[in-house]
Length: 535
Image (cartoon, rainbow, N blue to C red; front, side, top):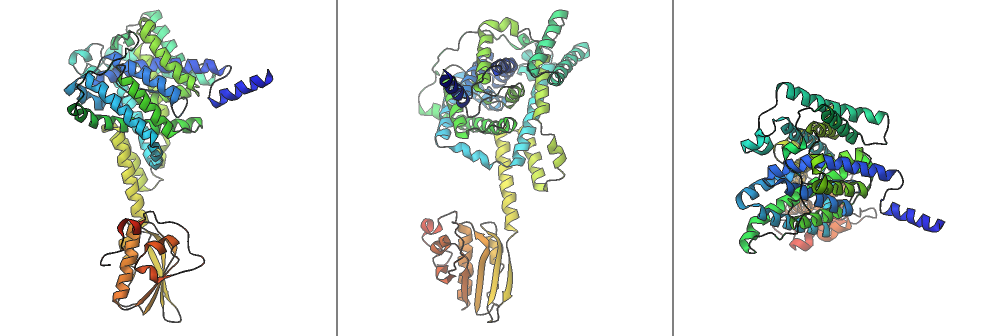
């Protein structure tokens, strides 16, 4: 029996399953997340121009599958605004059935990304881009909550969802703000006394009890939409299976797949920093792909990782797959049987929870380090934040990575220089310092003076590194200039790889026992078959 018990415990650790009192914490964390998912899913459904149940079904199916199969336990996925803003034009022009077909194709693309292990490229995202990402997303989450401060009913009547209604004023606004503040106060105070109960759930319960006990007239979940429904039915998208349909949905599918994976993988890294757990990027790609493919066949709008709900989960103690799984099942329970109760929850309580998420998500230390980090990094942080808020996450990350890469290349390009001296025998030695690559190739050529140098010139690469095809071409060009001037050139401390790839200048290389052993990134000799212009 002890051996069986030990084996069971080991299996629980391997599967990241909770034990003992952690089960209660995981379930309560899941309940908290499910409550926070309801208004988000409904609001994003309005943004996309579809029925509320389309958003709720997506939150349930995507949340359940990614919780079971995802790359990091404790991460929450569902319908998101980043995807909804892309979907709205597709739905408006072609209808919701084309959206379902697009979500299926989106999922297949994400599965392919997981199979080919493309998730590893998220490592190329620099830290300043991550800071801009979390800051921008925190602002987006904050701005999304402002729609709850509109008079119920006026937004729908305006024809613009929750973004076109009349703003609250007077006593209703004061009451709404007071309840939001009370929720935030409970969430802030409770952890100082106990960690046995999720603070966000406590805030929701306290405010809900006060509103119901005193009969306060404040906006509630039911004012957004009715959330009652049945199990999501299997549904084949009713679109023509022809080339025209493929032409319509493919661009949207690729954009949605890219946005979903970028947001999911960045959230995966962020949650990993909070929990100290490692996760699989490619595994997360596969999970997101499977989830969206299934969602498209069950009338859902698709989704990806949700940073706000993920932070609510981990801050509430959710660390295993049980919290995410229970959140999805609780959400389904709300849809099937508990909608009358859920619709009574005041929106102020959920807004308060999300405001605390905003405070916890925003990288406040980035405001301090802006004056300390290099100017280029500070600009990247601000740029990514602004683009995230005014455009979308995928564009912001791509822009941030490109700017960071250009800055890195420019900085390294300026490092190329040479220290020269003349030997007693009359030879001139150039000791090259700094990396030689496409960005520094022009600067490298300017280091030499073939017309005025002596008959023997030695170029020593011990302090440099040849990185790419452009570097090899630059070396060949310098060799050609000295050959045209009738002067001898020797190249020292180049790697064996350079020996093989440098065709014309290879005979000028002097072998040394301490030659470096790195490899040039591009197999230039194989790809081009010749070296340099004019050879």
